[in-house]
Length: 231
Image 1 (cartoon, one colour):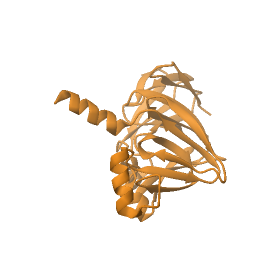
Image 2: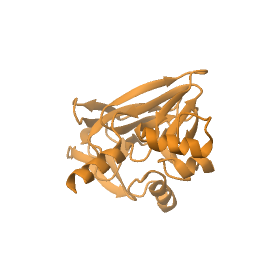
Image 3: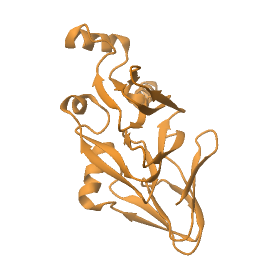
Image 4: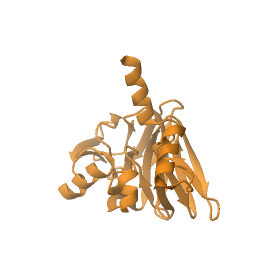
């Protein structure tokens, strides 16, 4: 199986070592460097239907890069679009849901499937609207987060509330629901007002048993700040 490792402390690379015959796939334009023993091709992973669904689900490119060790063992370096951390998660015993823009690369034994969300989550979440990406199969997946990344463990009876824009991926066994505030006593209008005055926007409440990866920076807030500075 290809070996994924993260190299570097600030804006790290994803380093992948492949034995002859092994292959991975990654987000478009992720490849930074590869040895001559490797081949790179652009493909619609899973066919045109799956490519369209993933495009709607988490903003992935229509074509993904497929890298295969054709002429012998070889290494490659990959990099996410946004600056920030990269983390490798093992898929198999656990499967994960991915937020928009989190996917970097996966070994060929991992499939990215698209499933529908509940109406409430679809209307408010930043995770693909009615569709969301879930891993299947076994292998490794590399995800990225804007800024630094941290791993949180959710346990029964100890629910966790996380700002929607800081969630990178989460264990698919977890139950999650979205709301517009951390409270629930003021009704929809009261919660909406509290959300605006607190500046928190949408939050995700996780319950059950599993882990959640979060990033330190809010991509939308950072973009808004840079636009204000330019005006």
